Image (cartoon, rainbow, N blue to C red; front, side, top):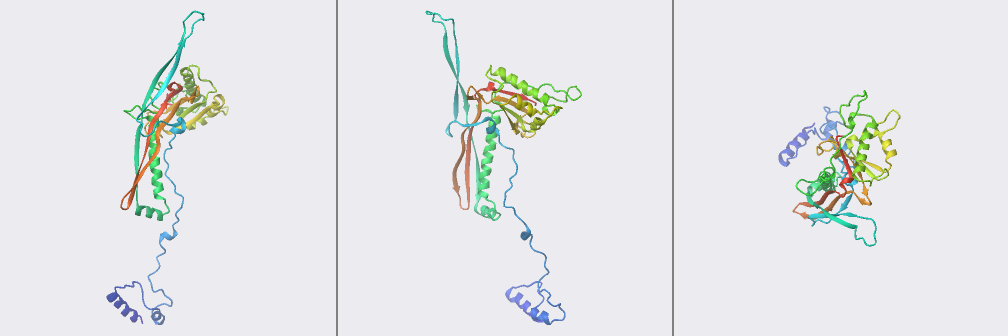
Length: 353
């Protein structure tokens, strides 16, 4: 009884290029054909729904983790000049002179001022963002604001570059980093460490012991050196910053048999000490920029003057958007002076912690 459909199917395919694969006959034919089961489907067997209809897309965008940029948080930040500025000079004035015993007719005694200039060079850098019309539409179909994501990426790239320069400077320019400025005093070495058995520990780093007192001894050594370098301008109440590698922050939790941790010792004895962690001060998280684990202890101010700051000419300059037939691009740029130590003697560095 399905002959009617077979005749029509061949005609449809031949004359109209209409193909109906899997169709067995008309419904009326199927109802009269004893060879076909009642209400049997006339199309191909169901192979389930497309996975698209059972796939959930979360509207929240999860960004990949990157190492945080912390140089400005730790050392401060200031604008110096603008993007036309190539070099800068910072005046340093020293008060000098001498006094003698008073006499009505004596001309002895004099007071003088001595001025010097610290020079720095700026460095400007850039990156581009590019996006196409179809590219943006396709990402929009997935609920991703693609142009905004690319703009955020450009800012992240510039900030990561500025952070690296703030910490390590640039070779060939008078532009130095907070960790390797040549004017900083030579780095100290940690105090020799003792193992649990009383013999020498495997090494002198903080990771070689679990005793908070031994780690605390390194910080005391740095504080003693800082006291000498500042010539009496440092007290126990002076605001200071302790910079430790992020990979050594667990050492602050070292606790002795009296349930006193390293963090407790520092809070009690140096109440105005701020502790900051810096990934680039270590070797595991610093991307290979530091040759060894570094600790810094510095006074944040000396006689009301900031002892250090990172500096920039332009934090972000967004240049003109260039339009092409079906795409766009935009340049963004920054400028930096690196890190400026106004008082290098206000900082003590220890290598190998």
